[in-house]
Image 1 (cartoon, one colour):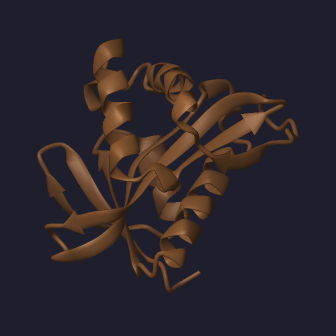
Image 2 (cartoon, rainbow, N blue to C red):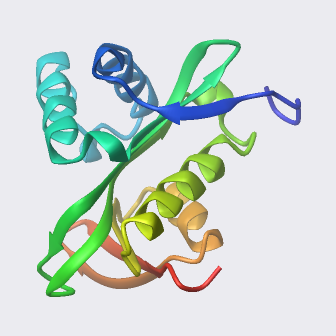
Length: 162
């Protein structure tokens, strides 16, 4: 897709979307398997867990009706590091052929708006330490590194800043 302009839209996920989100997850993590679940049944269980955590916090990006990415936010997350509730971004995946088109940024913007609606002032996520593309993506969105655990990097963003 490269520099092509693509029209996409974002909507809140529905329970019946979880099967497609499982497929997007598996495709999106190709080449980064050390940071992901790799067995379809494990991914399905993970999707169910994300849904149970916060069904309102999952948003899907679509191009011409096709699901091409999603973000799974959690406005009910108690961060042990922050010692309070924060907006956790458990997952963001965009299909490889739709990357670089602004879809990931739009999904992140949407989930952070959701966190603000829920009166949260901080977003938190964990990313693999060698997932350089994702690390750079989060930095461009204003996330800052705030610690590490094994091969995971904790990143946070003050939601009161734009």
